[in-house]
Image (cartoon, rainbow, N blue to C red; front, side, top):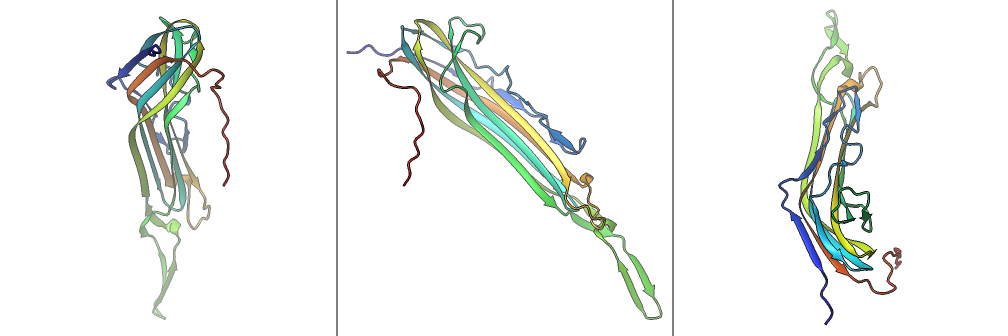
Length: 260
């Protein structure tokens, strides 16, 4: 009988969920805003502890990581007189695994597990609309010919009071995701397997005026766009086991396209 593989596991119940949310991005501020959320990953969003396991010489570690990832995106476009309002909300959650000599303090002496950083869930939501608005009232200059009992007059959209039209879209999802990682040909010793979760949220909003006719009276002040995004890591579990890879096996492979 072969010796059974060593096994370790650790889980997080989600009480201390890792969450990041972008600032509300509103185009009425300087008419343009970009990347008001995190422009980079949150380096403080490091995992909940680590699973410790003893590894014999030249053995491999097979690590499975499962986690709930929640994403929130909201976009809204307002406008009138033919303005184009565009709002984009981006949210993402991912993870990388590290094998660190136990006890670990920083990741400086750690080895990243293959295949590296993995995106567990991501979303990019874009809402763009060209809106004319709702005409509430118009000022019309009328010339009356009392002799002929006729009247004539004209007006353009620029002479009218136009109210905003608005379209908004919000999505919230929570889903569980799983990925396997490999640490190949490990040196003998005790290791802490650390999961480093990273979340990202960003938002952009922009208004443009595609019609510059004086009859329409379009200007960038006639539009408004808003975007908000958020991402969180909820419940998670990591399982670690020592294994021995098949002799001569290659941890990497090529994607082969199969044609009909």
